[in-house]
Length: 223
Ligand code: HEM
Image 1 (tube, rainbow, N blue to C red):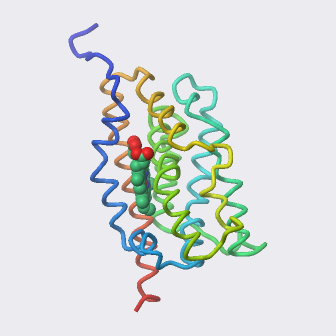
Image 2 (image 1 turned 30 degrees about the horizontal axis):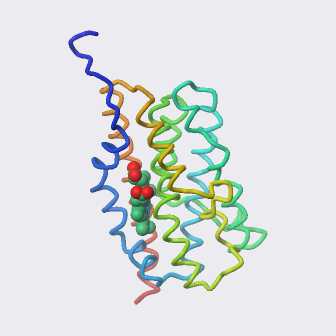
């Protein structure tokens, strides 16, 4: 071991969560999210978020295919997580058969996509940073959103909620625990872990900007 090397941590998942708590709080504080959690948003508002997610997942899941056989990133790739087909079904539900002509990435989403394209196909740790930020969000806050939107839209048949329904992951907490164990046991160097924490913060910032833009779109209708 050289003098610049430090021992590999075994509590990386915990560190990641602790060091990005402020960023999580900022995402949460966006008016769009607050209105959503208060049960004040309708189907049209929810569909706007799904449309932005569609573009993000198209890039993230293309990167997942690319990284599938990578020694470091590959173990994080799971078909059980795949969201793109679910997003397509939801968008068809909300916008109708011609949905592809009706949705477009916002300026904030374009920036998010550019960052993922820049790093997620070449840097395994960077891919994991973006993968973690989105899928753990969907398996955590996403489930709260599903319950709230399900109530306010009165949908008991699940139509329009495919994105937030992980049919192949019946036990979300157990899946997240296994994911955190994977984060802890990859054996990244301390320097690589620092880079990944920084990239997760960046992924949060992109998500927050997307939510801020959606918040802005809500304002005229709430006046
Ligand atoms: C919509 C409102 C949100 C709610 C209610 C919410 C709620 C939560 C909760 C309760 C947890 C802890 C879950 C657990 O310990 O198993 C969590 C974790 C997480 N959330 Fe959120 N969240 C929201 C929005 C977001 C957003 C916008 C992002 C970023 C894209 C995000 C990313 C994450 C991540 C990455 C974790 C995992 C943290 C970890 O354990 O390492 N969340 N969220």
